[in-house]
Length: 288
Image 1 (cartoon, rainbow, N blue to C red):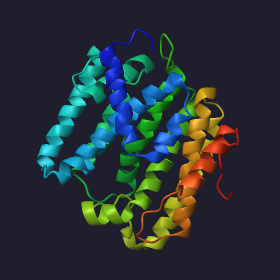
Image 2 (cartoon, one colour):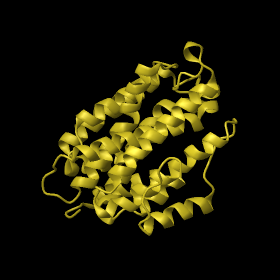
Image 3 (cartoon, rainbow, N blue to C red):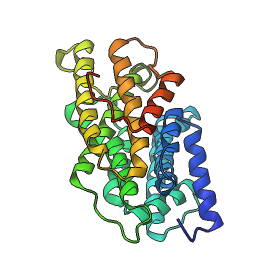
């Protein structure tokens, strides 16, 4: 981006710092993004991360009540929408997001469903198939769509609509990521938060059958996403292929290990996945 003020750069640095503090996998993938898009993608994820902490993490650990969390989330959403309109916020993470949104055409059609899903975490503890679908759309699929807006539009004078095939791929990749996280965090969601996003045991089904169905859904979503990745701009493909590969590996490990220990990908395996993506190896498909 040209014409950035020192405040703009400070905000973007703050957003990058947020992401670096949370996810080694995401930090690895973003390093493979081209400079045209890298900063804006980090800004999108920083906003998502802070909103998630309001309803799931830091706020609760500090003893903030659910009612106060709701008020904080409402204020965070209101400031986000206002900042996108005026292109300024005193909140550095929101300011960085507003820069990305303004350049890349990220509108309220994507941010409102996201905040609606975050609000659901304060209102609902158990999901059925319908509420799961709605929650995943807002919490994950629209995040993929925000990133797609960045991939397609960063550096353009005026944003354009992405190809429908890329839209489908972004949604399916986001859904796969979320379902993998639900399975990884099943014990913590149950024990610490009292939540069930997957309907484990719903309608008389047992946990083994539900896990199998979720993993099959993840495989299908990852396969659709893999097909779409080749249509992304060249400076995005390596990073998205790496992220796809990391979650495909997590899905494989979740299929092999149904215990209560949170499944992770060892660092050497992460490095191999990233190296293959950097070399141009196509995304992994289910069954391989």
